[in-house]
Length: 112
Image (cartoon, rainbow, N blue to C red; front, side):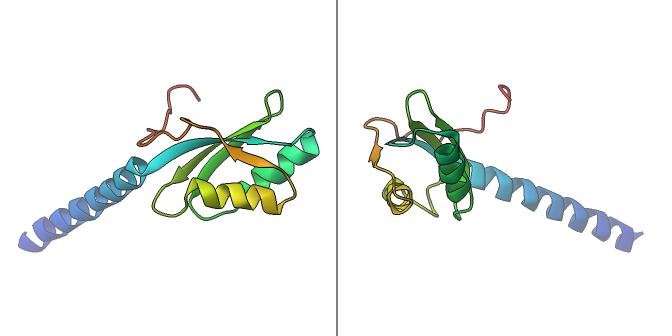
């Protein structure tokens, strides 16, 4: 009986620690917008793919109408200047939009 109780307590502790880790990672999520010189779907695909393959970047979306890429990232892993440099290294102009960095962006699961 005591063994079963201990197993249940340990199981609950493991599950709760997973929730705490997921919540902690979500708290560090931020968003930045970077103006680019991208002009085609090939450019869009290249930039989005490159950014999504970088450690710390959760999501990226390039709007070709205004040439602005919106990036959701973990601020403990990467910063906007590094993302800007990555875009420039691909051969595009990049400028961090002023007032575009939002701290503590919560995952907006209701709109997806």
